[in-house]
Amino acid sequence: MIEEPYRWLEAIANRREYIGDRLKSGTPVFALARPEGILLLGVGQGQSKVFEIYDRHAFAALGHPVDIEKIRQAAIEAAHLEGFARSPRDVTLRRLISFSLSSTLKNAFEQIFAPPLIVEALFAELGDSPALDSLVRVHYDGDHHYETSGVLVAHNEPQPEAEARDWIRSVLQPSDSLMHAAGVCLVAWQALTGKTPLAGLSVPRKPGLQVSGKVVEAALLDRQAPGPVHYRALDLK
Amino acid sequence: MTGDFLALLERSPFVPVSGVGAGPTPVQATTVFAFHCAEGVVIAGDHRATAGNIIFSDRTEKILELDSHSLLAIAGVPATAFEMARTLQTAFEFYRRSQLQPMTLPAKLRALSKLLRDNLPATLQGVGAVAPIFAGVESRQPEAKPMIYFYDPLGAQFEAAAFAGSGSGSGAIKSVLHYLENWGKPRPAELPLAEAVVLANRLLITAAEFDSATGGVHPEAQEFATIKLLSPRGTRTITHEEQGRFWKDSHRD
Image (cartoon, rainbow over all chains, first blue to last red; front, side):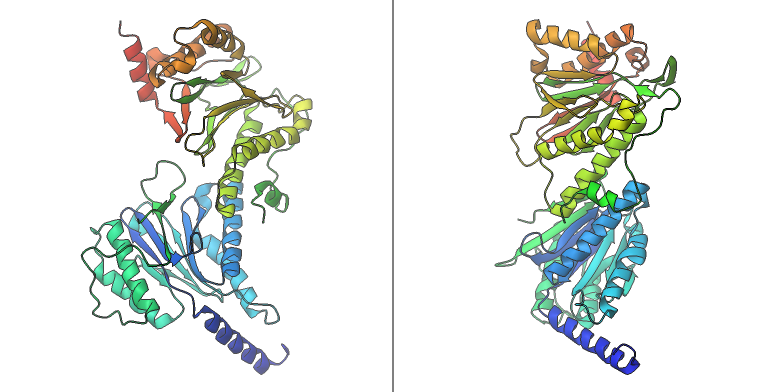
């Protein structure tokens, strides 16, 4: 079959359709570069959405839990081998994504006789200031882009994802507290999962930090952490 | 996926620790010790590294943080010891991140023991022997008591009831600590942190008096030992500024 270009393209298109269908039940995850550090947030069942990768690196994703786990382990292994062989400062998101994860995802997607990885992800790397933070959106087919606006959303549909990103950027100020930023993400999460338009949506003065029946998973890559490990889970209760 | 970083290393081209052929006189580092105080475990070391009768460095850091709840004091050949520490640092963090839970204290002890045993060829050749002290506390038990362990160069592990010492200058220090533990008033385990830190510096000065391979601690020149505290909350470095303040307060009269 792969000798026939048309059949191959058709198989790839079917694969996109299949992955899109499987991602429909996924809920969005967020990453925000803030003065305190990089805030990551998702809504799941405990430790299922937001993860530590390395000293200054974190990852959040939606998709099939097994595939999220595969990508998480691959990222952790690559980062630790690099940090051990060279130094922790040599572990950079650009190299991690470009040379390790992106090609893994692309290969998995294009090998049409093997099951695909059903993952939409974002990665974050803490810099010395918000301007030096790196946020990368990584898609299931290995395609990725660097976000420079300081706000990144990963969702199962591109249009609402872009709208949510723009809306969060428009309503958040650098002076807003971390908890307020988390609350804004949750307002966007409710809107995206409820398919409510974000345009014109106002943010309560004190947005809620809980979602009934779910666990809000939040973490901060803390710019002020005293040691080498910057990741810490945030308790929003 | 076991969270075993050493197994991962075996699949990669990097070899963390291995025996080497006989060569020039190895650099050695000396005199580290740990004892219980009122706030946890104080672990301290001098700054001197020697190669035979040559002082190689007076600025060596021998107390290394493996993670937020464990410390390693190295005595022996720094090349091997630093590599062991780096391997353990990566292995502990790799396990915690990949398995989403911290490694238990017994597992950390086993990991160090395994590295020492794997280093047996170098130890037997006399070029890579390391006899470390490990201080750790269970991170998932807020009321857990910090523990001190010491190892022989072949990897055997022993729990220290009150104190442990390693390196060429440790004999004098262990003698003093034994005396204080039995007849001291207060005993070292009852000392508040400030007094324990002063005691640690005095012990290293005493060791340096009788052991040329111990040195680099000169309070009059604001040069203090490397001292870290391990409490149930985790590790903390006692800075030279803090040590200077404690020293000044204790010598005021």
